[in-house]
Structure formats: structure tokens, C-alpha cells
Length: 202
Image (tube, rainbow, N blue to C red; front, top):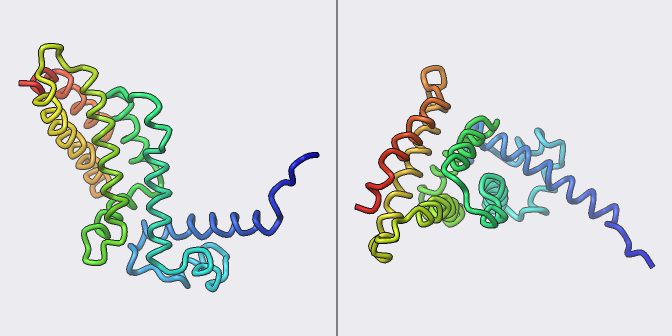
């Protein structure tokens, strides 16, 4: 006996949730969290205003759902199934920059730093994932003569620096795209990092 497929009402609920999240993500990127209302989201999504709290309880719940989806898209759980190369790390950054809502990453940062900070934990996790990927990459390149404890600390510091460089390029490309050559900037950082890789463990 075949198992029943998803109920129509569940499919409608999932579609409504997706449309609300899509609209909220676009509006948060355009206007910020505080200047986006349920009325705005309802108008953009085509879903009634009353349906939004039914799905997400309140605005904080909606913000957190958007953040979780964005972080999952940028750095999905399956990303841990393989170790990224430095080239992949930079390629992912470039892909993020070219996505339509890349400004949302910095909107999230502003929210994470605010007194409310409802997304602070999710954003902390986003940074931690980025750093962890770089640390794993460096660990595989660690000299066999390096002291493991000291090397781990050095790799952690290098991951913070490299992640900061990538996010800095991202921000500049958003603010002044006409004067920032994204690909050239990423290649420049990657080249400097590769040429000075041995310095990480000195």
C-alpha cells in the first residue's frame, strides 16, 4: 500500500510560508528590519497580513526564520561533508556578492549588534562556520613540524583575518560597486594569502 502524499492544505501552507519568507528577505534587504512591516510583507507576498503571525508568531520569529534560511543557503549543513579549498571559499564569497539580496548579510549584522539582537546567535554561528571551514583548510596544510596546540591558535587567528578580508571586500563592493573590481580583489587576497601561507605557523 502506497503511503499518502502531502495533504493539499500542507502544500498550501508551505507555499504561503515560502512566499512570506521571499518577500521578507527582499524587503529586509531593501529597507532594513525596523522599516519593514507585516503590511509591507503581505502586500509583496500576496499573502494576508493575518497569516504571517500564524506562521511565525511575531516579527522576531520572522526575522530569525529569514536569517536561518539565508545562513543555510550561504553555508549549508552538507558543506561539512567535504573540506573547501581556498578557491572554493573565495568562489562562494563571489557568489554571495552577486546574489540579489547580498546586502541582507550586513542588515543582519546591524540587527545582531543592536540591543534587541534577536539574530545575534544565528549570526555568530554564521561567522563560526565560515571560520571553521578556513581553519580546517589550514589544518590540512599545517607543517608536520608545527606544535599542534600553537598551530591551532595560529590557524584560528588566520581564519579570523581572512574571513574579515572577505567580508570587507563584500561591503566595499556593495557600497561602491563601480570602483571595486570584485574578482580582482578576491584574486589579490588569495594570492597574498597563498604566497605567505608559511607565515601562519611562524
